Image 1 (cartoon, one colour):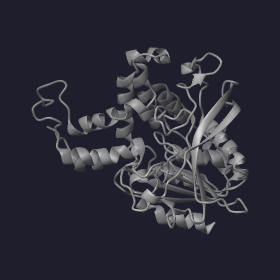
Image 2 (image 1 turned 30 degrees about the horizontal axis):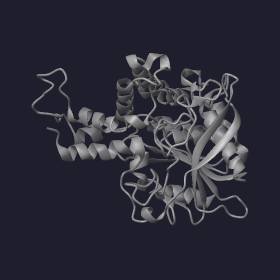
Image 3 (image 1 turned 135 degrees about the vertical axis):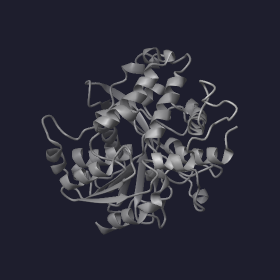
Image 4 (image 1 turned 90 degrees about the horizontal axis):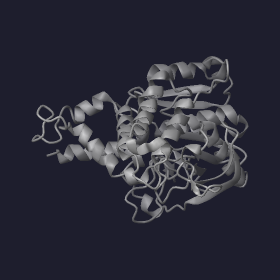
Length: 398
C-alpha cells in the first residue's frame, strides 16, 4: 500500500496549488473575514463585443484610511480564490492562502494597509459555496441555461477591469501596491500596463509579463486538450449530465507537475510505488506514488471545480501578452513606469531565472529578487518566508 508519510507530504505541497497552504497560524482563528459580492449590470468584455451582467466575490482586511491611499490589491493564483487571509468561520481547517503575508505585523501589514482580494471571472472553484464568480457555468438570464461555450472569451485585462470597477465602488482611486502569485502576478503586470494612473507600485510573484511557448503548451494547451478529449465534455454542453471529470483530473495533474520541481519530487518520492502488489512492471495500471497521491488529492476536490471554467481561465493565461500589435517586448515593458519588485524562484519551471533577468532589465524601475527554494513554482504559496521581508521593505519604502 501507499506510504502514508510520503502521501501526506505530497498532499501538503499540492494542496497549496488547489486551495492554499494548509498550516494555520495561531492568530488566524480570531481574524474572521466576510465574503462580499460586487455586481455590474453591464460589463463589456475585451473580445467579441459582448456585454453581460457579472458578479464576483471579494473580501477586505484592515481599514481604508481617510486619504484612501493605503489600499493593496492582492490577486489570486490560477486555482485560487479571493480568500487570501483569515478565516470565514472559527472552525475552518485553514486560513487563506497568503495568510502568512497578510495581517497585523506581517509583510502586508493590515495595521497600516487596507487589503482587497477578489475572485476572478471564470473562477475554477465555481461549485465552492464560498466563491462568487461569473463564467460558463453561470446561467444566462436571456436563456435560463448555462452559458457554456457561449460565454465570451476571457482575458486578463477583463479580470483587472472588473477589479478596477470594484475599487471604484469602494472609493479607491490609487493603489499603494498590486501583488499576487502566478496568475496574480500576471494581473499585477496588467494593472501597470493598462491602468498605471491607479497604481503606485507592483510586486508580481513567480510571474512574468509574457506567456512563452513552453507554457503555452505545458500546462496551458495540454490541460485544455485533456478536458476537451473527455467524451463527457460534449463540446462544453455537459451541464445536467456527467461532468468531464477524467479530463479535468488529468488537466490538474499536468498543472501540478509543472508547478513543482524535479529535485523536490526526486528527493521526496523517487520511484516509490503506490502499491507494491500492483507494480507497474506487472500491471499496466500500476502506479508510482507521486502519480497516485496527486490523483487522490485532486479527486477529492473535483466536485468544486467546473471544467469549462478551467478551459476559459487557462485560455486567458495563454492569451496573456503585454505587447501590443507590432510591439517588441522591450517596447511594451518600456511603457511600464511604476516601481516594480519582481519576486521569482530560480527553481521555477514555468517562469525561469533567465527570463526573469531579461524582463527586469527591460523594465524602467524594476528590481528582481531571485530566491532558490528548490520547490519550484509552488514556493510562491508555500515558502513565503523566503521573500516576506523583501516584500515588506518594498511596500514600506516607496
